[in-house]
Amino acid sequence: MPLITIPENAKQMREHLFELAEPVTLTRADFALYWPLIDTVWNKNGLEGKHVGYRCRLSRATKACKRPTTGGKTRNRTQRNIALCKCWMKRLDHPDGSVTLTRRTNHHSHKLIVSDKVKLNSFLVNLITEEGSRNHKPPAVLAALRGRLPLDDIGGRFITPQTVPNLTIAWKLAHPEHPFVAAAAT
Image (cartoon, rainbow, N blue to C red):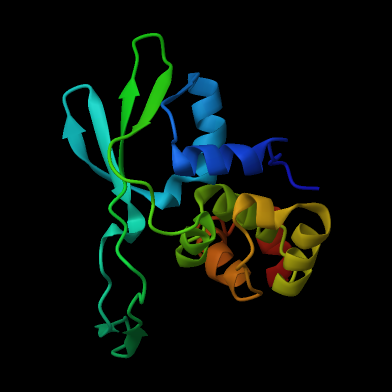
């Protein structure tokens, strides 16, 4: 069983923090709990005094190109074929530690599932890394997560078996002394 627990109302809070139909004020603990479920929808876009501005990740066009990688190979980058989203929001950190999130412009021009397809949220990245650090094979990790958790509710509909090694390789390289990694090497 994963050490990371999913909040009971994760699906509703993801929708609420995506839409921001009205301003939302969260305690510091609630912000730390729910923000990783939605953090990849928003890109930080600078500071405005006490406020931090964010724009929707899909507000920027991605062009197709070939990017060089280590080893002299190139990696194809596909173009996003979606309408650009003009949604912006601001975050205000209060002296008491609470956080207020307020949408500043139009609604999103897409559904939350489109953002989930573009990038995994950090809650899922941490969950997969924690499970993958136990040195199970990627399909077993994915099957275990799908069998125990409502992945669709937390943005995990598009996780594939290749996602697991992609996320866990950096952790394993950084922690060669970890007993799970050492056991696999022997």
